[in-house]
Image (tube, rainbow, N blue to C red; front, side, top):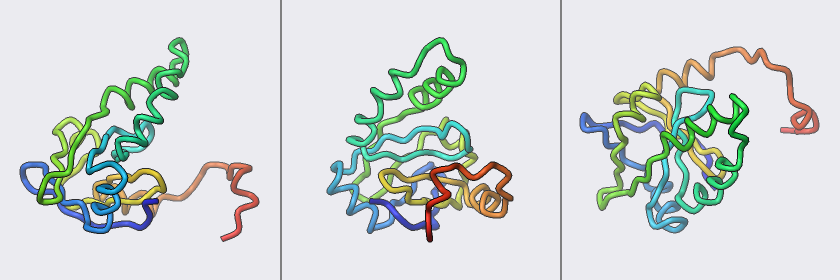
Length: 146
């Protein structure tokens, strides 16, 4: 399970070093094989261990093709999905299309989300944290006690 947030950097070639704790967990879960794709609502990336992505992919593919929302979701998630592998130095090369989608530059945040991770530009992450929540509270959250 991925938890916590990590401030990380990207080098000029688009490589990012995966923090040791996360890298060790990924080595155990998937041999360092990942699938990175675009988030459908926020300008960040979703980072899945390969087995987790392969479990999710049939559900995405099964979404209705004649519904604009589900078709857009499929196009983004599958269209941007890129298999990556952690190299011997613990880094992955983030493709330019994904870097552009999420506005990634040198400073980034890698944020645990349970079975996956999110990769944000540091600027976008800080803006998100300072953004007021205007949505209604979902009923599933009403019984949540923190």
